Amino acid sequence: MAAQIAAYGRLVVDPQTKTTSKGTNMAFARMAVSLPCMAAENGEAVMWLGVTAFGKQADALAKHQKGDLVSVSGQLQINQWTGQDGGTQSGYAMVADSVISGRTVRPGGNPQPVKAILTVPQIIADYGAVVSQ
Image: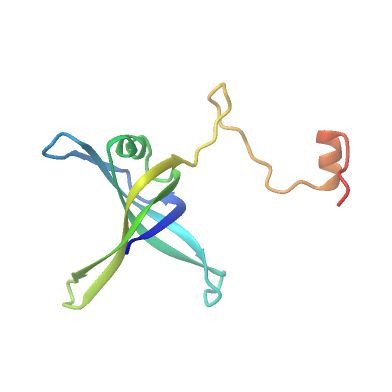
């Protein structure tokens, strides 16, 4: 049985690209995904996720760079290896079925600033009315 997941996070390295022996494009990247964690001081923990994509999804991943936000979905895998200290290490990886950019741009191609929080006066000024709750 396979575990399908969706993750939204920030790339921590530039994607690396390769071509398989059959000529299929592939791309690799690592991303940091923030997860809720009650035990953490700030209420969040970071999951480090390796992402591998093939074909058109590899092309989509390769267009990104370190620091970009991406949304990926695919099959989760747990990899294990022997660390330098001789102990068993493990990490999470996925083979992506979907890679979507987290970037948002206006039709002119310039990034649109986002308002994080709107107050009632700002909503009235921007939209001219208040919607009842």
